[in-house]
Each structure stands twice: as structure tokens, then as C-alpha cells.
Amino acid sequence: MSPRRSYDQYCSAARALDVVGDRWTLLIVRELLAGPRRYTDLHADLPGVSTDVLASRLKDMERDGLTTRRRLPPPGAAYVYELTGHGRELLSVLQALGEWGAPLLGDRRATDAVRAHWFALPLSRVLRDAGAGTGLVEVRLEEGEFHLWAGAEEGPVYGEGPAPEEPDARLTFDTATCVAVARGELSLPDAVREGRVEVRGEGALAKELREA
Image 1 (cartoon, rainbow, N blue to C red):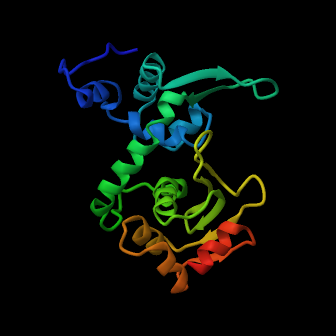
Image 2 (cartoon, helix red, strand yellow):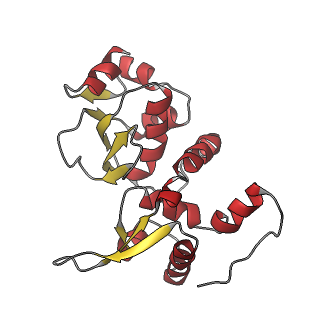
Image 3 (tube, helix red, strand yellow):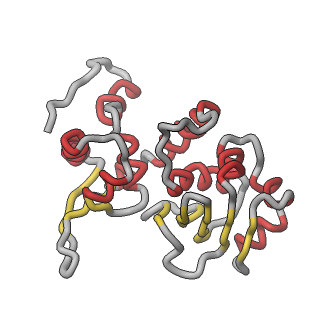
């Protein structure tokens, strides 16, 4: 565990950055918003982080009350990391940061890694801002599938792969459309009306998106 560094400023923003300002910390939070994750899973979905740095950040986050570490019961018997309630409160911070950073995306660079589930937080924000209801949404992109719980106030915000149960709506995008929606260049209702997003399902949320 690295010694905590501080800005030594009597300011709430500075105090917050004392805890989450180190490189990789907020991206680890992004991954843990999907629920409990094993160390190996976190390392796989944080390309570029070294094993030493990841281990150090996880220890720091546990010390600061953002995460906990627990052992799964048999037959899993693996250790997983998960957010505390205090850590989950960073969801709104990440959504605001993602909205601020969306115009910086530009075209994808040859060196840029991408995971389908990295679009989950922007899409959950888009659904929230569009006034969509709550429910389980399954999303299919060229990079893969993920699901998210629109309007969830506790528990996981999203998960990798298909929805664990029948979703309220299924959305199919191409990547360019998903990026345009995430960046605010195209509204989700307009994307649906223009046929750039396919909406399937009979749940109230699917009907709401088709009729918006």
C-alpha cells in the first residue's frame, strides 16, 4: 500500500482528489460498477495497467473505503473486489466526467483499446437524460454485448454479455451511431426514428423508446 499523498489544501475538491486523483483509480471504479470482479478480470479490462500498479491501487481504494475484498463461497473460492456504497457514489462523477470528455474522443486511434461495456455508462446517462424509465436493457455492438440497469439506484449499473434475464429492451447499434449518441451529436430518439438503432422487446421501456 502506497502512503497517501495529499494536496494539503482545505478544499473539498482537493480532498476528493487526494482519494481518487491517482491514475487508474476512477477507471477501476468504472469496472467495479459492473459488480464484483476478480483481479484477473480487472487486469484484462484495464489494458495498459501493470500488475503492481493495479494491486497498489486496489489496496489504496480498500484503505480509503471505496472497495472491499471478499472470498467467494465454493466452488468459486476466488477473491473478488467490489465497491462500497461510498465507492458507488462515484457513478455520478464518472458520468459527468464522461459527458465532459465526450467531445475529446474524436476518431478512434490505432492504439486505442476498446471494450463494448465501456459504452454502458454513457448510454445509461443518455437514457436518464432522455427521461426513459427504469429497466434492464441489453445492448449489442460490433465489439460485443453488454447489459445495463437503467435508473438503478443500487447494485450493479451494468454487466458484460447478454442480459441475465429477459430484458425490458434490446438495442442494436453500429459503433459510429453509439459514439454519436454518447457524444450528444445524435439523440437516442432520433437515432431510433432514423433506423440507426434497432429496438426490440415488449417491455414498457422498449415501447417508450420506439414511441419517443
